[in-house]
Length: 169
Image (cartoon, rainbow, N blue to C red; front, side, top):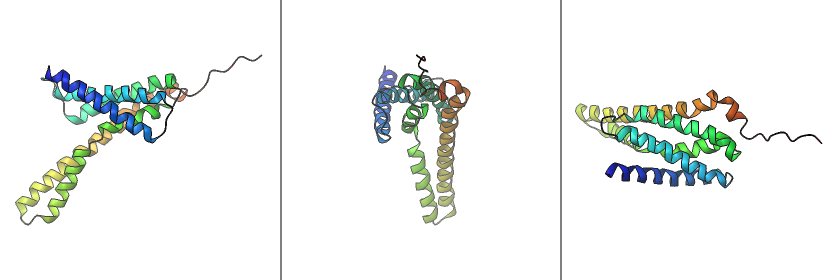
């Protein structure tokens, strides 16, 4: 029961964040709902892949699969919203940015510079490298996973904003 509550909370917060991020780029009004739905689906997918007992996937492959889902949904819903897939894609991905890993990597780097002994330096360098590499690979997984559907589904993604030709009179 707790997993369901956490799942709904995760979906809600990521949907709210996606609406806020999409407001920055000033899309059409109908795009806000699509961004919220896509972000909630993607972030919740990653949450479930990481937290389901027995599955417990690492954050990097879970992010790759969630980003693929976000990319596919953005491409498939872009003709309905009559906007490019990127309009849905980027705000929906932003809630998955690994801010805590970047913060910890930077903190580890700063502590490396201020450490006096070799043991302390090695510990903080480990924290810097682990968190920095995790952050990098999460961002890489997000970029690859989100853009792959645009290239694999070219017909849908590149014709989403085209109008049907009107019959000649």
